[in-house]
Image (cartoon, rainbow, N blue to C red):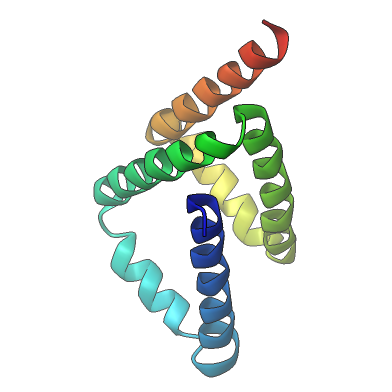
Length: 124
């Protein structure tokens, strides 16, 4: 198996486990996980950054940044299916982000950096 196939395998297994656990066996598990891991936002930011860099490295061995970004767009549309099911929750999140833009500076900087990288790759 290639590193990209291993990443996909881990992600797919995670989705199956989440679907079975959260939706069929013990729905409150999701609340417990969110409460446990989202209490330390700095730790989550560092962990997600490290994982993004490692996964990004392996993806870039086989794909271009444009292909990765296009795949990300596909994944965002799948995530939007969940968001569409909870419009009030997403509206509340949007309001919170709007009120406290300082908390979103790091993720926005990362997104902006990758977007500029894609634009540079496409037009240079």
